[in-house]
Image (cartoon, rainbow, N blue to C red; front, side, top):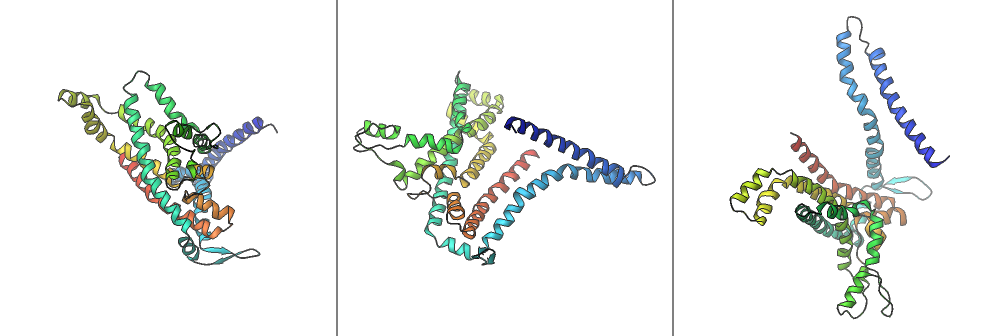
Length: 335
């Protein structure tokens, strides 16, 4: 079957299935389960109206249960068990977590993730806010925004390939195609550097890739927030003699503080799950390991499902509080 026809057929079946589900479930509810006739008609209508929203929610709840709740429970189970040679599992309790805590690579991944958490959200949000403010003040601001937002359209692996070329190293006698080495030699450097193998600094070079991608996201959200600030407050500040820096830091930033925090926490969640960039550029070598790549190594390279699942639970525990905080803030905004 041609892929295009297969896609159209899938859409047709999916849409028809949704329409059929909602139509027949409502018919069953109104005609069979709670028929609106007889002495109990009023009570049946009320009961049907109470149940009807759950009919609409059921497909989403079922999908969430199948693709979110079940994997979490199964991962937790795997983290507390160990595979037995020949098939099957045996209960080991917290042994996998203890083994994981004894591995230097795990603590290297935790340390690197903390560095990523400190640097990437702060830089992405700051650059996004700066760009949003500056592009609103120039005539060709929309073109600049489009160019800065463009990396968001590139996959993490694609961005990693681009930046790996920027950090590329060739022998000293050859021309350098890596822009960083070309600049390094132009400004008096002695020999080309293998940037991604230099411990500590290589992690920062990887962070630049994610900052480059996420700055566009932060810029779009914060630009919309800046445009939502009432002009009256800015005009009043100008009349009171405030300079542009005072207007920005004392008038604009406090009014979009909630949006800044939402952008910050959203990027923080992305950082906790970062995998593609590290996998594609260093594969966790040269002290660049992160939690998601550590989990991948344990699950699919070492075939250690117990420790791999334990590391997955650690990532989930780190992400969960931020998600809860984000949801609470969103609810406060809606009230």
